[in-house]
Length: 74
Image (cartoon, rainbow, N blue to C red):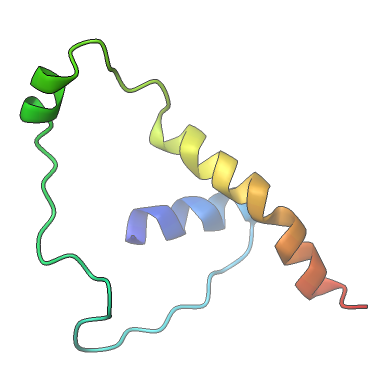
């Protein structure tokens, strides 16, 4: 999450508001597995086609209208 926030800040030039809370949130994962060996064995034709920066850029661009709405409320 930290990496994503830093990328968004870099791409937008805006500082993100952050709040750190103790405890689990509803919907949080108990664990996270990043070894994709088994997944790739089940889907041998699949491959990663976008870099993290490309994904971050797409998220920033798709969120831009929402940010503009908050900056210029009607």
